[in-house]
Picture 1 (cartoon, rainbow, N blue to C red):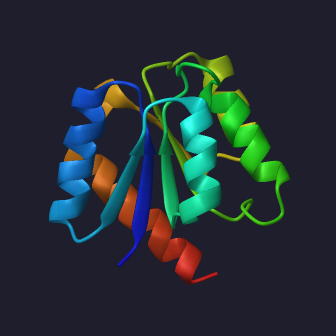
Picture 2 (cartoon, one colour):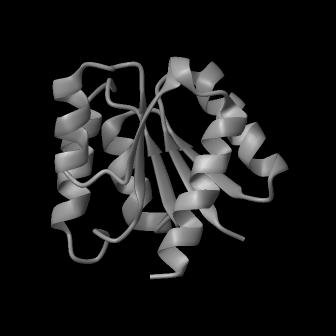
Length: 126
């Protein structure tokens, strides 16, 4: 069973994504701020991370940068899941190593799960 870590400070959203992922056969963990997110990545080594950018204590860009610099965790796929949709933010996220940049308002939870499956499948085929 693939483990997905959701780093999201909005409990309504994190529960919604978690429920949808569990229905699709994934195991989920939730972190509510950046520091907890980094700890959980190191402790549970998820198969994929759904990462918000606007977070307390440490933002998503800092987490992304930190994980991608760490040889032990740099291959974990990370999907930025955010409402920040400016071109420069998208470019920054992708240049820091995000596998995908999803704007929450444009994707249903079902579409997010489909994207998770797609990325995990492509990583398994590499």
